[in-house]
Every structure is written in structure tokens, then in C-alpha cells.
Length: 316
Image (tube, rainbow, N blue to C red; front, side, top):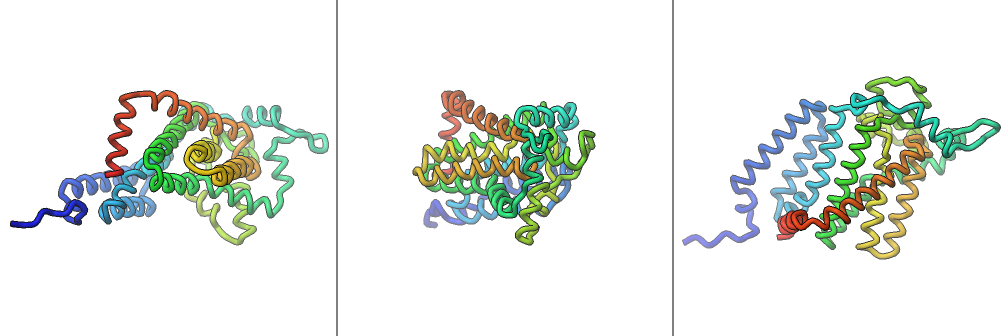
């Protein structure tokens, strides 16, 4: 009589059901992506990482299932390129510029300037490097913090990840109801609307120049939604991290995350990627998303039952 198969064996990892599901999902994702946004090697890498982690071991399977929340976010964000938000309504260009100037403008030599215009004429190489470094944190820091929570407090990891997704949905709603151009667009194109405008690294190119690299140039060459400047999700993400860091880390790390948040907020304006209005909208977006999650969803019995089920899936 054969001995029973150990629970963590490779045989269980590669059963027919799992192979069929992951293969079908992977192929469907690649085909849909090619149709919607065109084929990119990033898509192959994503599927390779997912399948590699899913079948490597039980611990890596739990990890990639937990991080499937962030994979879902990445896919939705990528697919937004197939549905430009400027098709849903008029793009706000001059009105948001004039409001920014009226509310936050400063007088320089008798001329009223927006904060972006002021910093455009008062750049410093050390600020170019510092703000570029801060701006690079906008996704790596939330993902690194999520990984920390995954291995230290898996329930808080789930709440953090789902709050992150909810904040994004709030931001996407604003994107499609209030298409808005970033400050660099006005600097380059004026107030005329130009559909399919290519993405621009704007002031972040000074980081590349200062360090003789092509970090932001290559990132923005891949394209993004130019008219999705409000709210600034760059500004929303570090606030989510800061909020959950207060609950799960010590004062030192909470302070670090707070400094990163302030740095990203300043960098967004300094590099002409966002108005102060965009940054404030991003902060508001994060606050609304956190509030909805903590005060509404977490109070739902049905929702908590689903959270418990997912917790069991990535823990057992």
C-alpha cells in the first residue's frame, strides 16, 4: 500500500485543477492584454512571476495569492489606457490652472505664478535628486510595507491591501468624472486640448540628467494617462502607508513613512507633475478610502466573513 502524500509535497502543488485554472487565467490575461493595450514583455514577466511563485512552494503560493490584490490593481491600471478618460467629458486645463494660481499663487516681480511655475524658475540640482528619489518611492514603499505586513501581521496585510484598492477605485471615479491636465501640459501645450498626448517626465528628467541615468525617461516613455492628474494617487499612497504604519510599527518607522509622504507631496509640485490642488485631492481621496473601509466595510458581517476566508487561504 502506498504511503500517504505529505501535505506540502510537489504532487499537491501540481494537481490538474490548479494547472488548468492558472494556465487558462494566464492565457486569457495575455490575450486580453494584447487586444486592449498591445503586447508588452511586462505582461509575460507578470505571468512568469505569478506562476513561478504559485508552483514553487506552499509559502510562495500563499505569498502570491496575497499579493494578487496588487496584481489586480496593476492590471486595472494598465487597462485604463484602453479607455481614455478624456472621452468621458471635457478635460479641465485652464480652469484648474487659474484656480491654482488664485488659491496658491505667489507674486514674483509683479507677476502672479503658480507654485509649479515658481519652482520651474528656482530649481536646484540637490532638490532635483532629492525629489526624484522621493517620487520613486510611490509604489515600491507601499509594496515593501505590504510584504512586511504579510510576514508579521497577515490580517492587517489584507486590510491594508484592500484599503489600497478602495482608494484607487475612489481615484478612478474622479479620473473619469473630472479629467484634468497636469501642470507640465500647460507649460508644453498651453490651454489647447490635444488628445493622445504623449506622456512626459517633466521635471523628473532633471533627476536623470543630474545622475546621468534614464530612470524616469524610460518609465514615462511607456505611457500613462496624461489627463488623470486629479487626484494625485502619488500623494494618496504614502498616506495609506502612514496610517497603517501607526497601527503596526514603532515611532521610528512611522516617522520615516511620514517624511516620505511629505517628500512625495512636495516632489509632485516641484517637478510639475501635479498642482497643489491635485495633491490635496489625493490626500482627500486617501482619507475617504480609509474612512469607507474602516467605518463601513469593516462593520459589515458579510464582508468580515469573506476576509476571514481569504485570511485562511493565505495562511493555511
